[in-house]
Amino acid sequence: MNDQAHTLRRMFSQGNPAPLPQILSVTSGKGGVGKTSIVVNLAVILASMGKKVLVLDADLGLANIDVMLGLTPKYNIKHVLDGQCRLEEILLEGPHGMKIIPATSGIQELVDLSYEQQLSLVNTLDYFDEDMDYLFVDTGAGISRNVMYFNAAAQRIIVVVTPEPTSITDAYALIKVLRNQYGIKRFNLIINNVLSKMEGDEVAKKLTLVCGRFLGDVALDMLGSIPHDSNFSECIKGQKAFVGEYPNGAVAKGLIRITKQIDRLSHGHGTGNLQFFLKRILLNETKGSRHAEYSIPSSY
Ligand SMILES: Nc1ncnc2c1ncn2[C@@H]1O[C@H](COP(=O)(O)OP(=O)(O)O)[C@@H](O)[C@H]1O
Ligand SMILES: [Mg+2]
Image (cartoon, rainbow, N blue to C red; front, side, top):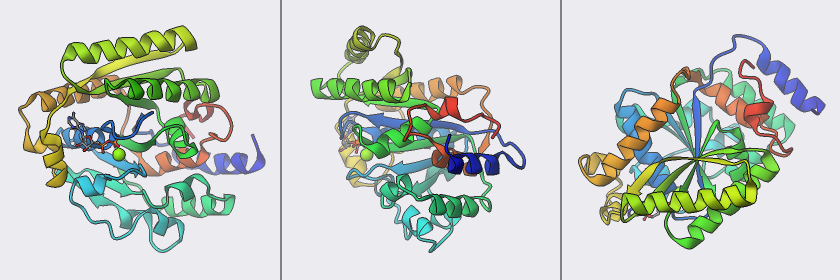
């Protein structure tokens, strides 16, 4: 461990060790597979169940969380990094009190912070102590450094795949890099845009077979599938969350089942502090090769 990382680590180990919220990254090999749509809807469902949910929009793609929900951010994380405002000033509020950190602009900067910038950001975080149950990170697609950075900081990586062959091969490529370069061996799958549950199960089986054959010790746990529904684009145009508009359809049922599964899997996880999440991201040694989960003690 280098001296700087060591100093940061020591700083964070002082004071009360707060529990971490459950941190989930939602990622994919190929773009346009439904990551942002899924994050928005899972967050809305969890928030409607009374959970405190935060979404970090780290996707440089076209449709961002704020756009999908019809919110207009005045500032984003770049302004925080530039010292123009504090983190709590950029938070947006979505349905049922869910919170969003608009970060699209500034994501690359966040990944490439100098040591001095990291320290200054960490100092601003000390004033921010809102507790959260769930933190979703909507990552970009592919295997770029910033995507890896956020995936390696998460406790649970949800890979979104569609039945398209390129989506499956790109998901395999992403899993391979996370396995070989970051030592991550456990992933969750959501199969989106399926024509039937059977199709979703077949895609999961195919990806599991390929990973088992070529990567060996990788475990893919299926969270569920979400059917194709042409009303998605209408919801995006109307800047509304799908589950709010069509709460009783097959898509909503699929999303609710997945949410319950996530909630069950995170059973026992405490409500945690946002500053710990961002500190975890900052401390993330993704420039090295280990998964942050193993490299940072939970009590830091
Ligand atoms: N289950 C689905 N059925 C139909 N269209 C979908 C579904 N999920 C997502 N879409 C559409 O796919 C497009 C890409 O979704 P988006 O969430 O922006 O993907 P990503 O974040 O992975 O780039 C959007 O136009 C969205 O409406
Ligand atoms: Mg997106």
